[in-house]
Image (cartoon, rainbow, N blue to C red; front, side, top):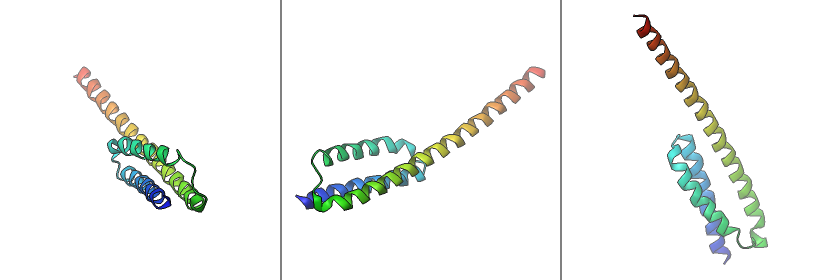
Length: 104
């Protein structure tokens, strides 16, 4: 049973790494689907108590997942700021074009 649980946990950690990589590559449209799969796997994994012999490994894995998730959030916030700044530039450009067109 422990080998099956360990395999499940390794899949969860791999999904977390994939989420980070997708965020790093700014492939935001892929994240919700993958995060949903990971959430389901986490719910299944923790639906039963963690065996004592796996506790320290799982605890370390949780810390690593939390770090990766924090990085994903930071990358998303940075991307949102870049997009917002770009949209502001587009809006300013449109306003300049409209002002020029109205004065011509």
